[in-house]
Length: 472
Image 1 (cartoon, rainbow, N blue to C red):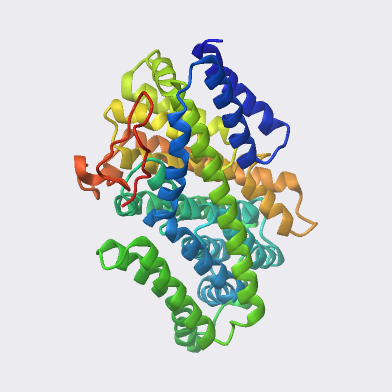
Image 2: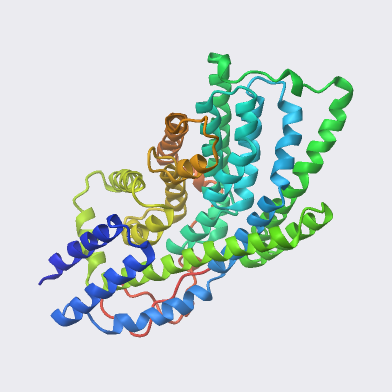
């Protein structure tokens, strides 16, 4: 059996295992183990590669970026369980409820805040769905608009710092997390603006989709009180996020230390507002533990898969395939983004990040593509993986908390315009890379530091000791 047969068979076996419904993390590891044994028996695989896996696992636990994931998740779960986000929505709605589409605007803004706080799409969609969707439906909003706004706002957790997604991408693409945080600021702000513009146009074109709420109009004498309430309700949670990001941006704290600052601030805020108790604290800890375990098992399985693939010469095989794509960098970027968009119908973000990106990243580096720009481009594209009808995870999450009166087809059709906006944003980033790169320092050879800087990653042949995991 030749390598040209082993590598396609390896990918085919993985696809069959995933379609069959086996757990993803264990499917990846099992397929890697099977083909590693076949490679050893046929003489196409060097056993030294298998020894590198233990050092890779050690590198994961020493990785500053990955260590911040539990802290950011815990911070988000605390703010969601203490219902602080619900206070933000109610306070802002008092200010904007008298505008046509005011609650939709509020949902986008609060949704962006919750997304930044939680850093996890499913948690954001569920939180916003429980808080904003019933209120919009009660006010007479069209279910398509209401569900679309909620789902799209939740997916902003993909690209709004301190996103878990950006942390994973920084690790998988070996890019400085701080560079990604700088680079994603303008694209994320533009995306939020496009959502608001769409709501404005739709509510002016079809006023019946978003009735005004006369009852929500504040009397002139109550406006200062409404502003004070909104400032208190939204100011403190957003202040925590800005404090965390500022500490990371200006080099005062590492990502994990910034996460610790956020958790401490969130705990104090919950205590001061008397919304933190042992019950919601335990729930936040349990949810964080489950999510972190899922991420780590996926990371271990995917790392084993790519290690076996590299030992079989898979990266050279993939690079040869990409040489047949016309139009150079542009052709490569279009092909990769279309492929990610298609794969997102069947795979979620973590599966794409841990399996697909390590395969295409070396090709992108050899083609001279800026990896920070590539990371932001992938992050925006992967938003669509949560919005794909009928398989998008965000739509499933929203269906689980939406009232029975909301049809599933309403959720699907409501997502389509926002999905189109996300695709438009991908095209804009490809056409105008300066949107991303203007806030990023030029890449230098020393921008990536490996766990063991004395050892370099070996592109082919067996590793002399191990491959380190890149960290900041």
